[in-house]
Image (cartoon, rainbow over all chains, first blue to last red; front, side):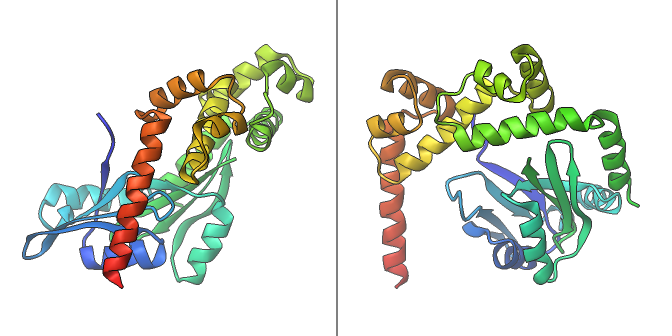
Length: 131
Length: 139
């Protein structure tokens, strides 16, 4: 078995695609229409385009428990997932300049440094740097 | 303060209280990252920090979840992938990441990536041709 795809629930796929590509710098990999308002839509890291695909799934719009779970995590400030970066501080400054909102500013925590931002599609996302 | 921020503080106070130990393992990891190709040994690493190699081994595993040797091997494989992507031969790559022999390198590479270095190189070549083709179509 291999890990090829991991999902993030988003409440607006088009808005999510713009955020994950234009702001975070990911690249669109697969875009297949499924129904009138849903696509199988994945993005990958620009630096690792053969790496794990992130599926931007519209589950909160179609499955109430998904919406409830996403909101509960968001309200508690808990990240839905995390991405690795070389420097949390530099990425934080780059994203702040682009208007991204952070709930946790760069914080050293033992052998890692973390920060948490709002992906504007219903999730907190953590960036992490190994120290 | 959110629940998550409270948890960050709680965990920091629970398992990351000993700053001296953290400084030792973080310094060790940085040393491995910057000198990963210099034939590092646990004896050598422990000598730099003036602590016993067994203590260093325990600390590193406790804070990073891997032994220094496991971490070093992962770094070597990651770096060898970059060399292979750039078109370097397997023998050259093996030399640059300081593996004892091409045979042990190939065996470890396969176990870590699922591909032999030769298969990995072929896959990268196919991917770059495919990307070039897509770019050509885009123009």
